[in-house]
Length: 425
Image (tube, rainbow, N blue to C red; front, side, top):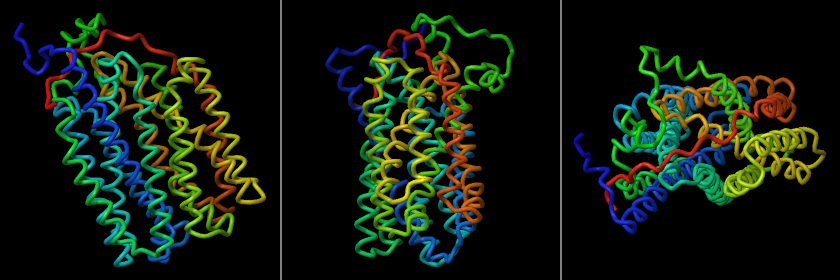
């Protein structure tokens, strides 16, 4: 068998450096995505005013994000297998940067269609890079022989906090939306250019071959002519993981889309305070994700997931019924902590297949982006008729229901670590 030079074992120090750089590159991508999302979210009140859009109309504008995300994750699994995770991630982050620029343009000329188109690019980039980074993250977990994906998602939440604080400053200074979003786009593109070379070579990013499966002491998958796309959903466990991701994505996405507007319209506060509250939500998500690995090691995935779902449901209910914004902020804290682990843990569990990791992760993530797709118009419609706070009761019920499926995230067998890719140091 021919030896692939990209997987030639290196010295321990060299391998450790490459793993560290790989992890830093992935963490940077998550962080940049968090910055991008928070930059958009904290300026939604100003963009809504620039568009003169009602709550229901804003819900339709937000559908652009969901459509783009849905397309991105729908094709990402196949593209990862053919071109590698690095290609998918870098193209995705490029789309995020361009999308922010288009949103800025749409706000400047007060064109909802342009804003929605920019959000579609933003969503495509976010969705496709989400699959690429998580597939690469599963490989990194195997190489490092420990859980890293919740921590990577924690860096996304840290990015949302920093982005929200920058948005607070921008709102306070009344900084033009076009300038704010354009600067963010340039910074994201520049940082991506710096860290992209540390992502592993395409051969290491794709799903392992039969030979790799044998190396990892995993039996080779059945070679019967079964449609691998269908294979992703014949597993009842994957369906349960899909529901968990759907519920937790709805919890996270509804906060991203509507929390600043809930603060402004539901509590009668200002856009600046809305940015602070969203930063509070992002901080709670970061705390949950950065500490999630230790909690899972101590109590187990199932218990942590079930408690998280219940905490999230209680937090959302608190936001709905809180008599003051201060009480509502406590609900936001619980909402963020409760929603923090569902997506990364379920996606990691879905990507544990030795051959079809990319497609299985993509298929399960589709459920999450289905929530992002249907959430904005439904919640926007309900918010127009019953109020945004009251509309969140739908989210609360779905999040609480995910506790019933928590058993699907039980720990997977840990295969032997694959060879460390021989990319740039």
